[in-house]
Amino acid sequence: MPQAVPPDAPEPSRSAGEPLRPHPLLARYYASEPERRRRVRAWFDETAGHYDWITQAMSFGSGHWYRRRQLAATGIGPGSRVLDVACGTGVLAAAARPLTGPTGRAVGLDPSAGMLVRARARGVRELVLGIAEALPFPTASFDLVTMGYALRHVVDLGATFAEFRRVLRPGGQVLVLEITRPQSRWGFAFTRFYLGRLVPFLARAGGRATRELFEYYWDTIDQCVPPATILAALAEAGFAEPRREIELALFSAYRGTAR
Image 1 (cartoon, rainbow, N blue to C red):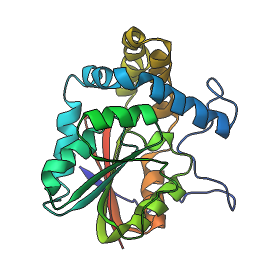
Image 2: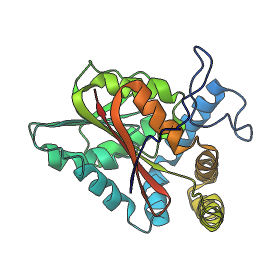
Image 3: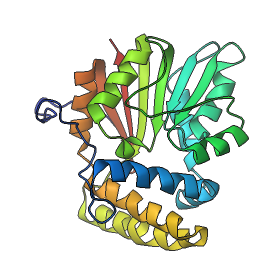
Image 4: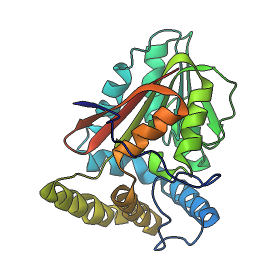
């Protein structure tokens, strides 16, 4: 069911100039923000060749289908201009191409050169190396901005959503897909076992970096700010009617319309 910003949603609270982080620094993996950036980028570069089969296996083959369904629900069509931020191996950007047609655009942006190589192999023609907090595109140049399972890896939610709003035309849409920590005791226990133990164990087949990335994957889910904070940050950035659609108590689709 869709969830809008509740009346008592916590406002993003931070000192002036302080980033609104999606989760705290995780000392198990790094000691500073610059180290976090380097390590996360290195993980994605090293694991790019294994990322698709692992994520497809962990979603029992439904991951690409779910992304396509959520993308189609935005209503984009021929001529639409779509930007997929932190595009990874290009699944969302590639799914957008048949919808936008030859007169539209489907652009993928990612900080990992290794991931962009995989996205190009998938058929995504427009690819840019860059980060979410500083998008290298003109103001009001897209109809839809998407992000799939990467919000936990940005530095600043406020800066990220402000950039999403800037590059969208008025009335343009944002679609952010994420995995959210389940609230029920048993749902959390199962998800912690599955994503925190079983998936990293299976990911060992891709090497040490792949196992570490998927251990980190779960820890960022576990430590991520609550959905109400993400919705409030979207509203603060200038998105009208920010809302969250939740499926299986785990998969969140955040949507909003640029004012």
